[in-house]
Length: 134
Length: 134
Image (cartoon, rainbow over all chains, first blue to last red; front, side, top):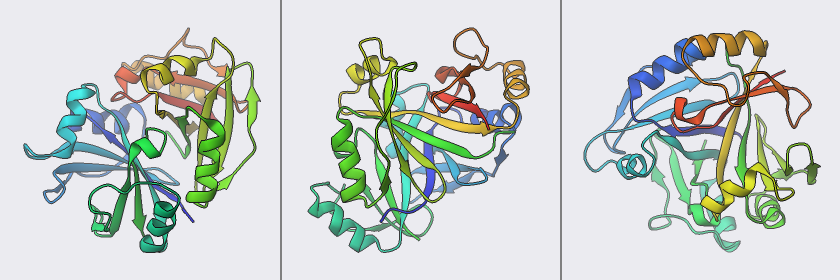
């Protein structure tokens, strides 16, 4: 059911420094910063040949990334995102298997303009897991 | 310089339960457990269309995963692995940019039989980062 790994999101304490590092030290293809005010993040995508790394930086005082960076001041891997064809069918199968969906359980429009849900990290081996309908 | 995302490694406290979850709840293509005694891990690969998830479980008392699971009893994302064409050239460019390589700085033969190095997570936004020559 899950398809491609859409991205790995890494929360970073200094977005410019992280972008420069991926561009200069790692020689990767680094995009421009994009503010996502509805999600409280500024993101930069690192385009790899087969998937993307999403650098996440807090935007605003209520950003969901603030707490993560308080606990992980150097930054860290925040979540992984798998693609699904039908997010309702995927959700229903996962909930029937005992996985918990964060929030009210209904898909929301994610940072890429597509329906997403997040699975509870405690049910997923400590891994915050996003599903995105593509 | 960095190429494909070869895999995302997730340390899990119960390998059979994690494999069953990816197979049954997430509908993924789950391989058989493989013991890697030289690396102190048992691994299961989840084959996605564009990359792999590597489930990691400790093998033996000296496993490098034991400490991680003590700190993260539910499990968690342990590292990401990028492919490179020439691991010496990649290492030299990264070291010249100020990144630290774990261990003695020389490539070792990794769990897939190929030369690997690991970059210090504190230099990589809290992300343990493996490079594998392919």
